Length: 154
Image (cartoon, rainbow, N blue to C red; front, side):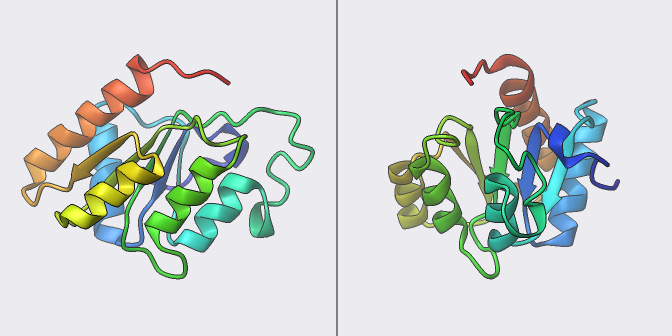
């Protein structure tokens, strides 16, 4: 599955550097019919450019006249270039993006990462299940709640 053609329509942003985890997440979303408007970035630097409309994404709402349509960000912690915790901190420190729900989806069961994620404003912390069916079920539940049920203010 490729990224949507118009990144201005993105509702779900997946920030994940592991191609296998990206593929599993996309397959899980597809299995649960959450396939519309998903955009994937592979490192923390690209994530910040996408979210804040800079660098290679400077033409994404360049005049900032459109409020950010992201319904949820799925964020891995172990990212190249800029760490997931730093990405989270920048999202939650910015007035325009602080209300976007950020779900940490990571293989890290480290208590320090969990505490720091919530301290910085994460909305949820999910440890990636190793077994495929468990992973699909977890992603389906994430999609159901954060994409369909959760209400956000703009």
